[in-house]
Amino acid sequence: MRKEGKKILLLDTGNLLFRKPSQTETKRKDALLRVDLLIQSYNEMGYGVVNVGEKDLMMGLRFLSEATQKAKFSFISANLTDKKTQKGMFSPYVIKEIAGLKIAILGLLDDQFNPTLQEIDPGLTILDPIITSKGLTKSLREYSDLIIVLSQLGESKDKKLARENPQIDLILGGGGEAQKAVIERVNEIPLYRLEPRGGYLGRVDYSLIDTKKPIKFFVSSERDELEKRMERLITRSMQIKSEMAKSGKQEEMRVKELKFLESKQKELEKTLLALENKNFYRHTAIPVQLSVEDDPKIMKGVEHYRAESAKLYKPKVAGLPEKGLSEREMIARIPKDSLFVGAITCKKCHEVNYRNWLKTKHAKASQTIVASPKYAQEECLMCHSTGYGKMGDYATVEEIPFYLQGVQCETCHGPGRGHPGKGRMERKVTLGVCRNCHTKDQSPTFNYVAFLEKIGCKISK
Image (cartoon, rainbow, N blue to C red; front, side, top):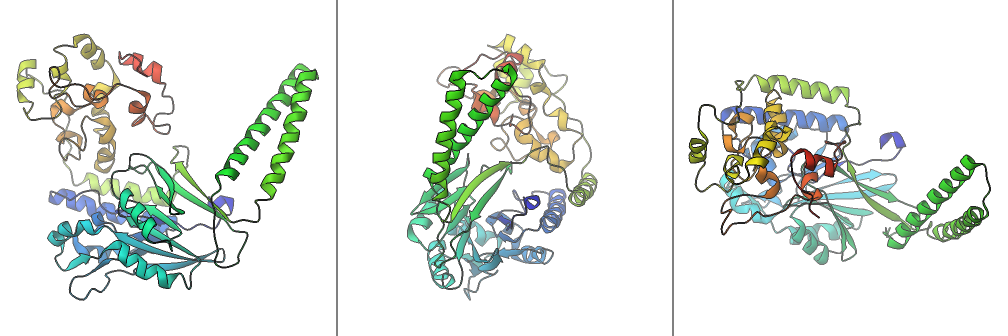
């Protein structure tokens, strides 16, 4: 984006530093290394503002305050306060001037987190985010052109915030369990949320033409549709010209179609021209492509982190399944209350499928990351094991229960407890199920039909 010559402001909605509490001293030390890496990387990328999320407070306010001293960007929170004095712990907002616009950015935490916060630091409290925002935006509106909220409230409360505080110009949402990118308008205020796991970069482009105050920005479905139609017309015109050039013939029907397309294109150009005196914004979810070159300075920091992290752990070799045990013994070792029962249990009724599965890369998916650094392992376990996030808090391959190693039946078909009988499998293997892990970036050669055949599954609509 910088190569495009655009004026850029990088923002983060929060929960940057930690994913979950560190249960051991080794993991705590690993987490501290990761915090340093994240802050150094954000410094290098030139981030401007980061909202404080509840996970950022996992090691307490004192640790977070010390960590922020290493940052060249601002940490903000409008409603995280001292319980006694009601004084804010961080700047409630910052104002950035970019391309002639004064942009006020404020951060909000969900006050539902208060009970957990009391266990971490009883001297802190979170004020009502909507009431807090109303008091701030009223004064900010007087000397800022745009007001942006970095939110950790979750989708439903973001919508409530938009309905109750019309002074806001944009809400960038975090918190909650977003399963897909959300781009919508509530009370004429755009709300933007991304899919989890960091696979996308959210981009909001503002086109400023009319600088009369108060500055208003519009998103026009009509203009977007006109631009799409224009793109289709241009593509079709280019296709016709290419076909005529190859054949060397000026076929009458194609010439007529080309003239028709060109006349429609001129009409659309006039319509779009009439919209050029308005201010617009556009949201885009940009997938983090593997083709993007790594930044040398950031990669140097990553390699340092990996080297230091590796010193904290004793290498172990994972096995699938436990050696020397009969199938009956392995099944007996699976907890009776386990939501997932393991492929070895499925074998009783689906032996052919089980044998086919053993030959696939899915069966060895956990072992393929044994040699990876521990940070990379935990990130990869979401797609290289079964039931991650639902069956325990494991962070490395050796911590995975034997009956959850690899990508097993239940990864695609859902937990098997109660099946057969009263239980039933939760879902069929659709393209959407596969795409949870076989993303366009991580699995560029993925072919739904071909890959299903490799693992012996039938196609489901």
